[in-house]
Length: 69
Image (cartoon, rainbow, N blue to C red; front, side, top):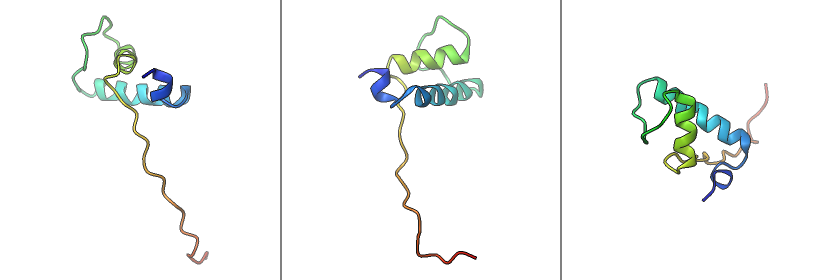
């Protein structure tokens, strides 16, 4: 599995890395032994090694039967 297939595009990769970096900055333990101390770099390395997965939420269908006020 490559990073591109796990993270459907570069935007998803950046969003996923940013979210994981925020978790690390808030006190979450790193999932790997990283060379860098920077949360952003650690998050990118975790994603590259396959320790962090991107999960798409279920698609919500809009309700069309509701009256508009």
